[in-house]
Amino acid sequence: MQSRSVVFLPVGAMIISIIAILYPESLSAYGGAIVPMLGLVMFSMGMTLRSVDFKRVFKEPKLICIGILLQFLLMPFIAWLLSIVLKLPLLIATGLILVGSCPGGTASNVICFLARANVALSISLTAISTLLAVVLTPLITYVYVDQTIDVPILKMIRNLVFIIILPVLSGILINTYFQQRLNYIKSYLPMVSVISIILIIGIIVARNQAQVIESGYLIFTAIALHNLFGLISGYIIPRLMRIDEKNCRTIAIEVGMQNSGLAVVLANQYFSVIAALPGALFSIWHNITGAVLAVFWSRKNEK
Image (tube, rainbow, N blue to C red):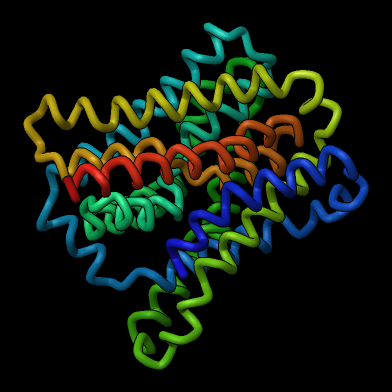
């Protein structure tokens, strides 16, 4: 079910994006559903975690630190640099920086599994970066963006507690104490998450139909380069530090695949619906590149 959901995500996202561009009125009115759907995604992610996943931090502190530092230092910096080089409009640049400031994406664990990477490390990095994002995402956004746009940092932190902490912790607690009884339900959660993310993408694209048609190529260039540099840097930097191949793959996937759904919600809520476009398009693109990487690395292992 998980591997199918990863394949379905980019395909479904592209289909709903086309529908949103051709028939924007069919989706644009459902903006109020974005936050609840993301909460459902975060709860589903929590249901894949247990308290033991956080204990791995003490067993692999070096790998965790490398992954977290690259996640929250490298990705926002790359986004900021690209926004300058490509001369992105202010709100689009803000959305791209917000994507770079977000934690690892929920699909990264499945991509790591398919790529024969270190799934335990991937889960730990996703869990830790998600919790740290409650404070770090607003702070990093403030550092890069506040000179030009007022960043409501305290409101963002408060809302992230409700969007991330409560749903994720609820999922972890339920999964920890009722794991065996919920296996049947848990098997459907990846697809529930994927459908939620696809609907969020469709709503954002529908509400930005004119901007997508007018400057979609520029935004797509920015998010494609952002993802590419994140994947390459996430692999090469640990490799230069003599980290083994399996863990380099894991860190690369975690760094390159952002929780762009969270970026969409925050951009839509605190900046502008236009600022949510980079996150919406990133959701499509990083799942495509992640799937391609997974196929490449898994075949490399077989050979």
